[in-house]
Length: 127
Image (cartoon, rainbow, N blue to C red; front, side, top):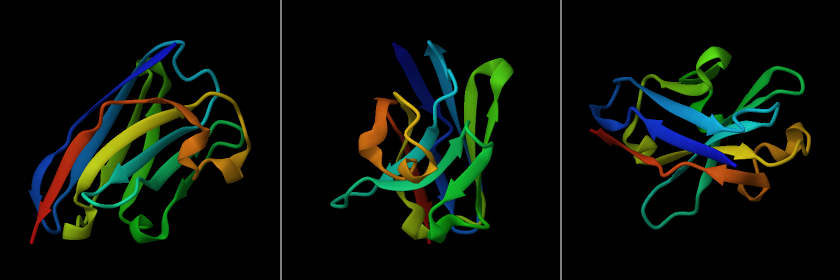
């Protein structure tokens, strides 16, 4: 069993920055894919970024490329999402998640391949 706890959300003006953290406990990373997703009111949960343990590569949705950076600290069992140049469209609840198995890098963008989810942290970007 894995427990994931997000933190770092808040209210920020457009152009500002936030860093989200996802602390894992239990069986922790165990060489499984870790991802960040977000869900805005009235919209489906969407992929934001993910880190592949298979080839040490990060993946991003197009709308956040160049602005967001996913990283990890193995010693702290923590994954981060650094968000810069935030826009009002980035407003959402952000979730971190871990896959239950290694499905390959192509599956990192699919929420259904993730077994463990955090409770979410609200990010609000004002214009």
